[in-house]
Image: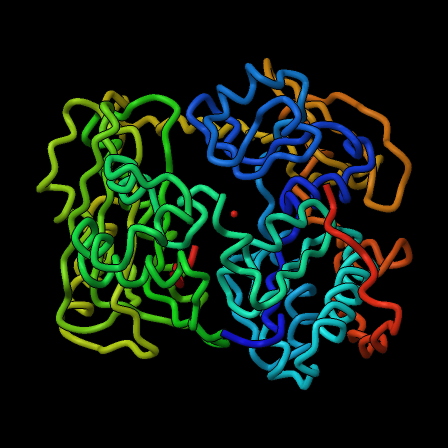
Length: 487
């Protein structure tokens, strides 16, 4: 534990929803919900205007629609979120070489490693300046927690939301933590909380008073010992700048349970290709292929196969995923499928297995490429249906006449588009046929750089200014009112 609050935790406020509001002037000040928009979708982020109605992250979208039917329900745009996230992370790296990102919108920073004096006033000044710089660069807000340990800094940033800063002075940890529910502590999930509840332990203070021996008896040595230290406010975990990815995975939830075995296999192959694309994008390879299947009754199965060496060959991953699928009964219906690769490495081991799989796939495509669909008349070309374009709410589009906009909704062969940019006034709404040749998918417009640069260039954020000198009158300010797994 440090004697000064020089560990900073930043958590951007309602990040995905706030980014959408910044990009879409007509949604500012209105409830916005980002996530899966289908009947089986899940809320990724809800704006604070939507949270007033009880909408929360991880809530089924269908439930959110009942609570807040007039909200804007948008599909995620991770290209935009990553762009903004990188700008924020560069601001953090300007503060210290020790920055530990936890997600696109959350990170720890070791301020002492960046030369900040181990004093409360100096740390507070850096935190306040960081908040101002984030707003200046991105137009978004973030909440900052400062403490002498990572656990406490995260608790402080949660208390600071939205758009605030809270400092937990070293020495006040037990008094602060005591009345909080035990779920506040890291590592206490539903199962651990239930075990503690059965033992009559509901708050952090009660957990600390139970003693280390009792917690070890209830939870085992490693978990019990660690939880006891946390309940006392002790957290010696350092800020780690590099966190190696442990796995790469993708998954999809389907609006209707899949019962056709051929369709299930096709989806597994598609997910395998997406997983390999993400794997290669990260410059990695892996040796263990994992298949995840969630059945109609919400039971979830995972199967894995370890290869002879690391690979990023799509044919190898596809074959392994299909072999794993053969061990799973999907006749009752499949709600979710996922494919992942773990055991990551920075190189790919060439082997005959990969070569043979690739050659076999090429041979199958050559043999089957000329086959006519069942039911086609001999000598007649097979009719090919043109796929109908699907326009998901929130995605970017460009019209030849009206310029850039975003999809507000679609159905019965029509798509409604609102034409506006991050730097314009709320735009006009127009409706087109879904196959209108003048309408095409677009790219997210940048939130960085101001109205003179609306076309998403690679903009570097301005460097963080040196911290203000400590105020001799005392501290100023007070607390205000979702590819690659690294955990």
